[in-house]
Image 1 (cartoon, each protein chain N blue to C red):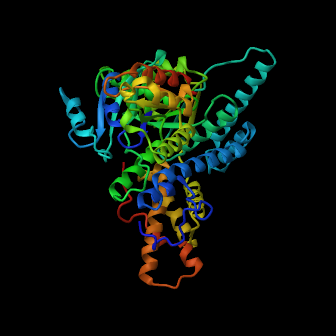
Image 2: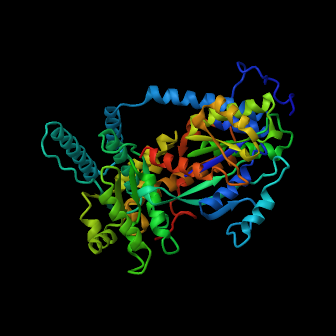
Image 3: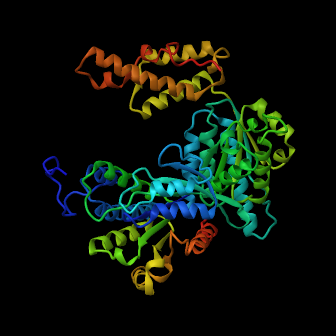
Length: 202
Length: 339
């Protein structure tokens, strides 16, 4: 089972992956650079340095983390959290990033669950083109698998106007305010996952 | 993005659209399609696929009929076919009894398939899965194939988790465990024990939600079941897959080449029959292995291509289709792997 993280560049996918995996109980890592398969002490902060950056499209070889999830009578279920490259609003000149975007879309199509991250901090107010990416992404995600919009960097959305706007656009139950940095909302995301696992048809 | 290499492309969606998700991804990679448009195309393709699936979704009756037809198409395997039909009749009648308010036997339908490799166990398991779906026993009717490595972990607790996950994946379908006896290979301290315990528990707790088929060589499976009474008592059906006879193997070969739009030359067919007869009881083939035949034919197809290309064209349709005895060359390199 894979929960795939998607979103525009710099939505905070990589930091969310690392911190949420840490929160759920990290079992192992793959992808990214070699040598990160088994994080020892301090492994996560090293990963944060390596994979989290204000420069968009930093992640070209995204990480995937195996975590364990306790869900009722079924006991511990292991789940892969998979990061993908940000989907840009415009065409991409670099072939390497295009390839990574295509690969990310392929992973999205295979997802069991989808987390769609949207940056709601005040300096990331989207252009119409960027909003179109999120709209398309949301519509596609809904067709593929149970999906949830994570309004990330919610701690910076003072007054909550951006989260409100997303709830108006996508429906109140499709949006969850979170913060990859402060771990705000992680419990709710976990609950959502557990609920989906219980609902999933046999 | 160079527009000269794709003069036909235009942003007008009516003109040229990617026909599959794979194509969408290729176009994104080549820069032909901006990512945001790719999202729209993927959504369109996804909903089209959902639509065709909904309109062509077969009814339960169709599923049963097509599964049985596929079973009948298999060459040989008479006792297997008879047992599968018995199974169908049994499930049918239990359902009728239930409708009539009579006591119906709700026992689980876990099975053991014994037979040499390449005798059709996996193929029949797949058919059984669809049959049971059509009969309303299984919700999804898919087949999950597994072997020891998929169940047994490397450290304490790992096995239980792997086994649980595999069972979860198989819910609503058939879990097919090949060479199941290898789970008991390592003795008492081996983690395989843990996997067996997990399977026994699933057989009991999840009956009706999943059918487990344990497969392997007859002798080893007999020993395996004898030493694991917990498993044995939960097996409803034991199906033995006899080795194919040389005649059946030739029929299989004929069927396989026809499917690939090739044909065996008359000489090739006769020589193959003679060869199989001679080798019976001697080489690995004595086990009546259809997989060996497939490998032989696939190699013959490659050898035919080499032969033709060395010869030079033009080629008649017949020449392009015909596999000769020389192409088959069963004693040639790279094929015999005596077990």
